[in-house]
Length: 280
Image (cartoon, rainbow, N blue to C red):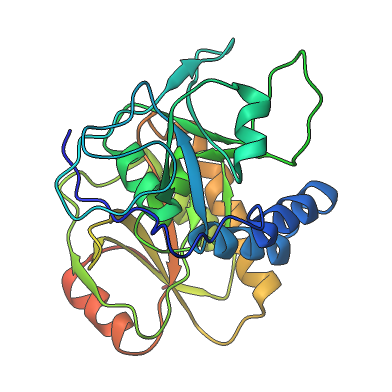
């Protein structure tokens, strides 16, 4: 695999403070896993730079933080856990990395670049700050699942994430490309979504479409059009219910995103997507 990656610059070392903002965000999620704290965590991840162990330092780079504009081949160190999940590792700082393996080569990568690299592999999860069991944990850590990395690789922080299901929240300035999915959800998934839509009187329409971002991420999305205003908690209830209903029908490598449609995007999706529900 070849990637053009922007790595850390030596003159400005942004992880000297140990990625303090990211560490705090992980601690807050560990103590209170709420949508607000999850949002802080995803924002901190997108703004972070990580130390990534690699079997060997790529040619032309030196161990540690680098800057390169050349095409660089990057290999990740990965392991398979007891549940058969393939995992790569990344660290907030050198001390955390050495607590895992004192001798491994490593390079510095922007987190979003790392997520893009992982999405081109069969790695299923990213473990942040894992540690050798014979040593004590010195930094908070956790795992980022593949559906979360799918969004983060495109610079989109999920509003929340569950197994195989994620809600997408876009900024007004985000540019996206919309079309019909080449591989739409199954008829069984459509029926489950229709059933959930009928149970929520505020849902007026559902549309399925493919959404690609300027940064290269592509997502199969269920667009939700409401008949009126809804609070954030009501929107989250809708998405959780829909996600829970279709989760058993999704393939292991399949993800489904949800987006509440408003303004010009609502009209574009109506024209270019495929309607799967309209309230009578």
